[in-house]
Length: 239
Image 1 (spheres, rainbow, N blue to C red):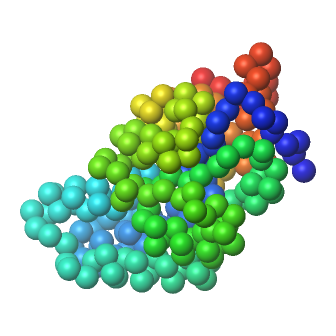
Image 2 (image 1 turned 45 degrees about the vertical axis):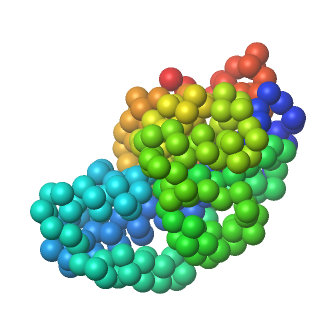
């Protein structure tokens, strides 16, 4: 087990949900592609990944409807939710090592996700993480602008009585990295989910990640060294 992170100059660790706590991005992109295609908007899972990863469903729907020049069917969200939640309950797994990390960290933690509260209840519930993190679970539905705007991260920090400059964000998407940077927080790019692609780590760094890593079990040591600015972050891929 990794060494515990001591009390430090850090106030809070903010985790994204999909692709950081739960290995859901492949499932989610495929479900979105399938349902959108059935609704008259042909798109592949790879295209969903490239265009909408880390963004809210509301943002994606607005963009798609603008391109179509019409609204998606009234039952689109219900169809998507039914397919997505069924697959989550059958197949979803936590990110390897995340339960151990949550047990190890000696820092406040919370979740800030573009997903809805209902989606997180299902995904975190299916992976036995919900009770570990509730009630400190925040959704883009609670702010005016979703990622890549900083609103959600600043909201989470305020709810947790944390200084933005003393917050660390763990994100897997470009939109999430950009939002955390815009909030004035230290942002770590995680690329260890099953949706990881060649070059994704470089894209996360280009978006502003302080460093990137692909094994969640590295996180306690990274946080410990971030809390002690004098300690080098040797062994990690930093900008």
